[in-house]
Image (cartoon, rainbow, N blue to C red; front, side, top):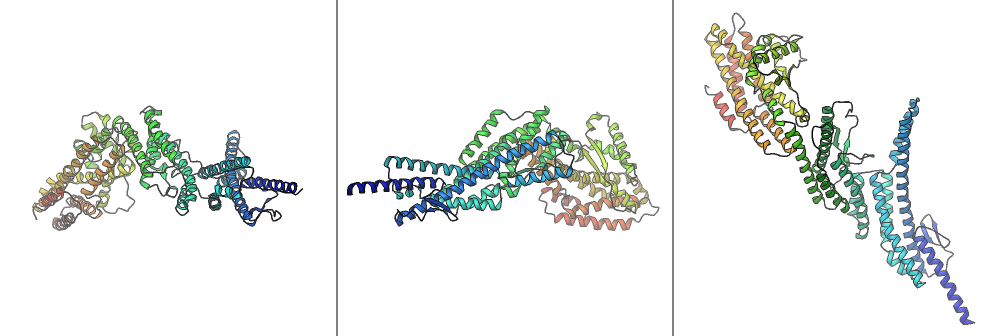
Length: 633
């Protein structure tokens, strides 16, 4: 009887422990029961179950606590996926309702729009969904361990609780950290780069076992980031429904009804920009600019294919781009140096295709030649004919129809050249009116210095000859044309000066020497020299970005060495031009005061020479210019 009672007790104990182990395994998967119950503090062994030792109770409570955190993580991931599915459904319903009918009630439509905005703000982002996927991967590994423990339990019937805890001890640390992470993110509602930065900062401050888990989340978020980059740099598509990518588009800036040229120009210059707040810490701004350039170039090349003006990038090249980015996607963007190298190779390839489209196929050098001929006044025969035709017009103040009269004179100048007039179809001249009050005759005559040249830019060269480029060319034209005009005026004053006397002829000679020397320096030593150098350099380049940089470098050098970018020197030089016009006005008087003009000229010319000698322009021609200007001092 004693043996039977002992066996019965052992069987009852085994059954009790079997029931306990069954509930422990259920608790580890997030389910409470009769023995392991849930309270405000989590899962724990009920106080009514007294068949375990105190040490065993502590182990069971530790295991139950792991299961409770598992339940919280499972609930968080389920919420993310459920809300994501809800967003898709609501977006479809919203688009379908707007596609079928329009509401007559404006207030109702506004409320619907506000509701959709609130829904979007409440929906998790694609980066949060990626983080949820990473958490599910960690939970799947955990579930596989539970399955193996259950298999051992079925084989051995009795399994020590310490054995179970030993196999799951890492989750005692990992799961609470992940729960805290989810709670912190749910309270902030931050997305995109902020989420990646937050996870990477947290990864640096935890123990290795937690670091490995958070690294899984970072890798999943980085995979999403690489997919966004791949969509942009391979197809030119900005697939960013929640505004989490570091490249953004301004839908209000781009008018789809505008011309193709305007559309491409806005798309290149202002439509797509970098959002600094969405740039991950590991991404430099230089790297983001490269990614931005690649996507914009892809869009331009794709658009050129549709219009039949160019060729798209070969599929073999796109395949190489895709493979390179897929490797980084698999690795979770672990090696940023390797990723930067891949982006550099893609950018070099895309820039070469863009160079072929714009520089070779679109006749870049022909457009550059037109800019040089007209903006830089290199077409001397035409501008001399223009000055001859407009001499009488510019000798009196501009009228209300001055721009129309100017256009007629331009046509007359073109006709006098006896050349093909179609080559001048791309240019026009406008008069920029001044808002300042002009009282004297001299001030009214000075208004003609605001004549501006306009050269029509052929598509798609507007991507290189942007507004900033043409504005700087206009500054060069305004300076050189004003200088040519005053030189022409001095030539015409030769006979009037001889009639007035020796003093007037001497002053005219000094003015003509100064203006002529300055004009030779600007035209030959600066503009022609740097233009020839730029053309030689561009012919050796096969990269769109390098061509644009070389064009900017040319303009920077010309503006600096012509002293246009130096406000004090340029104002002093225009002061000399003003004195020439004043000299022409004074000679119209019966008794001109030449002596006063001579003193003013001596003072102003010495002041200009002093400014030039102190100029920061580093050019061997400046010293030669100073010697030639000051040879008679």
